[in-house]
Image (cartoon, rainbow, N blue to C red; front, side, top):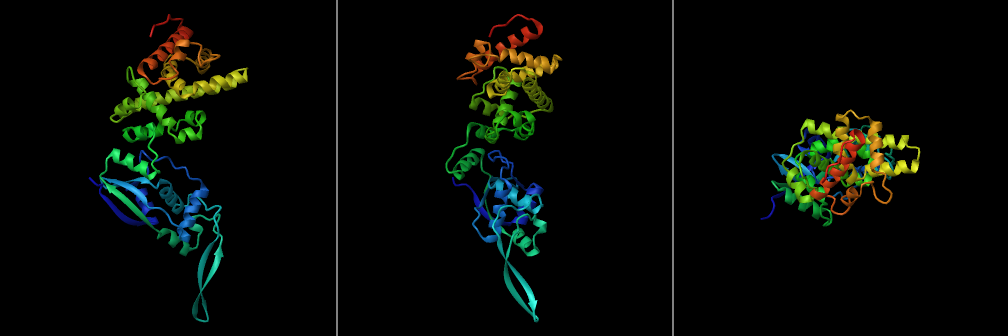
Length: 355
């Protein structure tokens, strides 16, 4: 059955107001964050003034709310410029018609105008009007399913399918909370910009939640997706995750600053924020706070455990289960047992348990 498709036209001013009122959302799960720099934003405004083609926007519509499937960068740019949030930069000069009175008659001349460095409110009034009144073609699909959203996003992106985490995000009920948690400075410190654009931070948060709240959890995509589709992250659970990430960041910084051997410090600091190891550490970061263990002592434990020469840790059972298949429940459990044995021995002198 064909999807219910319709076309409408909105001015730039109307689009910006609808976003501000919440009638249009740019926070669709398949959309990346806002990543355009000022040069790209400026070029869009220049295209609006000079007639270069701008592709249509694609949206889904549910309960009278439009969700952008394609066009977030453009829509956000329009809203930001109309709100004076950036000045134009590195764009060509434009032709600007000026009408003056000469001997009682209106005479129109064309001047070449450089608008670089100008915010919206600093532009001539007629140029402001041209931008506000620019008409965008908006294509929307009424009442489409999550699977149809995913498929459409794939087709709009030259047939490139959504990645595993992108598909999981579409199904994740608590995505807004996860995005807030992702603002923790651990992620901007430990992850590259490219990794964040691929939602590695959100993937870590989702799997951290599973590790803390689901016994015998699996990190395999189908299992994760099925659980996260119905889960709300509570305030208490959010605080627990943020506590873990802050403690790991504190340890990361302590190791880099307080270890005499700089090469060793960098190696171990890098290891503890690698995805598999970071996830494994999360429950023990929370436990260390509950046990009133200092950042220094927690850091020293991590340095001891992750001081492997050929592998990440000094525990071969941990290493064996941190390689291929690390997301399987049995391998997660074995890594947890190895860390638990080490943690208890280091801080309390307890005897080891078996996996």
